[in-house]
Image (cartoon, rainbow, N blue to C red; front, side, top):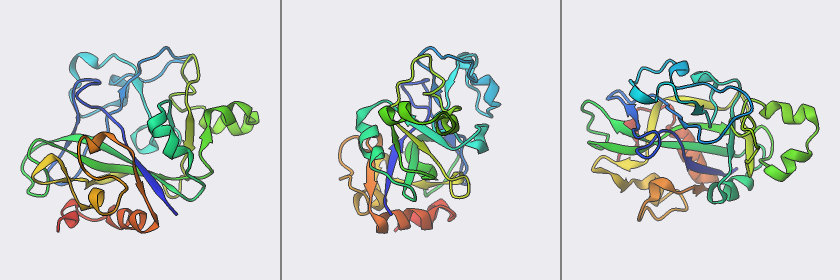
Length: 234
């Protein structure tokens, strides 16, 4: 068993703000905007019924990826067209894990969280099947392609994913509370989950990079998903 963790969700580049993190560890998952034409209508920010005031982007279509049923999706799917993420994800097999982390803006006062923003695990998929490359997807029988029909890359006018992932519905979820990857001292300060359990050094813009975890590291992450975020502190 192994896993990869990748950065997802709204950020200061697109759509110009991060999702909120609350003092009790709960958060709101906000996707990035859709940047390409779609073959079918896709939800807008207003359609997602978010608690966050998204202002002028309310009518913009969203790139709802990863797709979580807890947030209004149909299945647990994820696709990516960027080689830096698609490469390590493509190595995952059925039973492995794909973790998702987001940079979130902290609100209120919580001594376990950075004062302004930080990186936090917000959900995971346990793969229901081996990761599917874009090339392999095109060759799948129609019934196997159908399980990815709700994915944002499949809904684009031109399919462009280099990899697609399907999560097992019995062991995939959007978390209720986050697992911190940043130290309370600041968002750019990686904690021990990054520096000691992942493949990443925690130097430079680590919060933008994919991270690999071996079996022990994966088990560590899974053990923390139902704990209060302060349980990560040492």
